[in-house]
Each structure stands twice: as structure tokens, then as C-alpha cells.
Amino acid sequence: MSALPLPREFYLGDPAEVARDLLGKILVRVIDGHRLSCKIVEVEAYYGPEDPASRARKGGDLRRVMFGGVGIALIYGIHRQWLLNIVAHEEGKPGAVLIRSGEPLEGVELMKKFRGIDDPHLLTSGPGRLTKAMNIDKRLHGKPVYVMDYGLWIEKGEKVPSKLIERSHRIGVSEDLPIPLRFYVRDNAYVSRK
Image (cartoon, rainbow, N blue to C red; front, side, top):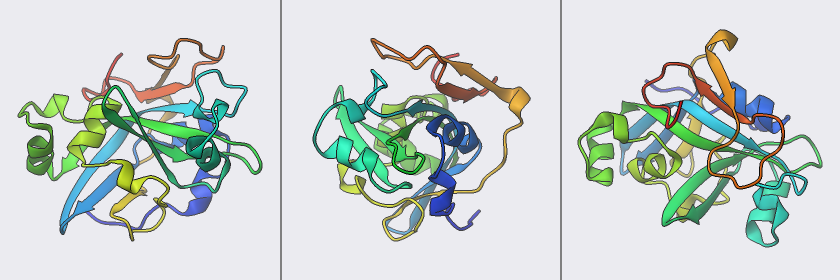
């Protein structure tokens, strides 16, 4: 299984629309010639400073990256785990999409080794589990995911029909926007929470 990365333009749009469109796409990580991949099954959209849960509300590097070019990996640590976001927004507006969960496709044995567990359903169901299983950390922060140069990219995959996409409020945020910005594939065993 191999294809070209999604083009940079894919990430140019409203974060909620990009988030929904990322469902079914393939997250790829290549380490020392070994390919690991997951079908993206759960995501959350984040906006700019008006979004109470957004990293763009704070100063520093995360805000700068969110305001920058689209298709860039935005990686930060929370609770001793790395979280992978992809910068996605309309021109002149910040935004990003958190990759919450994936369904393992390739490199499962290596993912198990990185996670130190055997249960395939616990490998990548949740943003911290996903990054640990795919060995994604701060070294990839600020790198484009629309090229293969850095060993992290997203491929086309499949389009998930609208009737199979569920929405809810984002998980673990103390203050949220009124609209549900979490999207996930209904009945997928790798979604972190139903």
C-alpha cells in the first residue's frame, strides 16, 4: 500500500471541513525503512483565539505555527504524551486538526513494540497512544505532511460516507465552542470514545 501524500491545498479550508475530510485518510510514518500506517478514524477541529480550547489563544511557537502555512505538523505535549495536529485553516485565519485515533494497517508489530502492549485495539485509540505507537514526537513539529521528506505524511485513503460520520463535542476540554467539533467513524473499534 503506497500512494502520494495529500497536497498542501487539501488543508486550506475551514478546520471542521478539513477534519471531517481527514476521516478515512491514511496517516503514514516511515522509520528506518519500516512503514507504519493507520486509517484516520477520529479527529477534532480547532480554531483561532476565539476558540477557548485552541493553542492559538496562547503565545509562543504553537500559536505561530497555527497562524502559519497549512499542512504542517503541530506537535505538543500534554500529560507526558505527544499530540499530533495538522495545521488547517482558511487564508489569514489560524486553525488545526487533532488526529485523535487511527485504525492500524501496516507495521502493527512495530507499533506494539513502541507501545509495549499486544492488544491491537489499544495501540492507536487515543491521541497519545497513536503518537507513541507511530513514534511521533516533537522532532516532527513544524514539518510539512504533504511531502515524504520527514517520514510523516497523509495519503488519500478512502472517503467516509456522511451517514457513517458522527459528531460530538471535543474530549477533555474544560470550555468548548457551542458547535460539535469532534468527528469520528461510527462503529469503528479504534475510536477512543463513542
